[in-house]
Image (cartoon, rainbow, N blue to C red):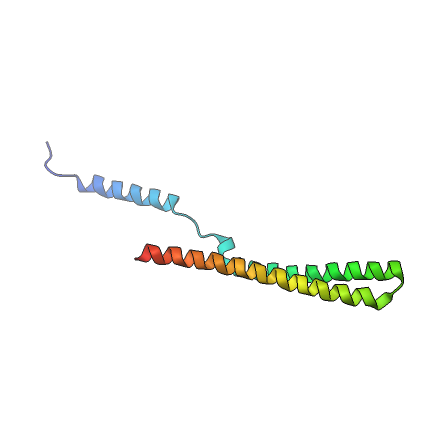
Length: 110
């Protein structure tokens, strides 16, 4: 009988364990890399959508009633205000999410 562990078998076992760990390691996520850009584009699209919706409603009402610039200007301004409001709501959601994530990371570090 052999006394003590066989070093070659232990080395092969270590190599197998390392290979298994590498295979199960999580891969870096691509969407995390672009999350700030996608959030910025989301807010830009919200603003443009508010303006476009206001333009469409205002132009439609002006065409319907024959009062060309009145409703167009009014609804473009209302669309702008709605777009900015939506952008601010999105920014506060993102800020709350980031604050929750940073406090969770701070708790893990202690």
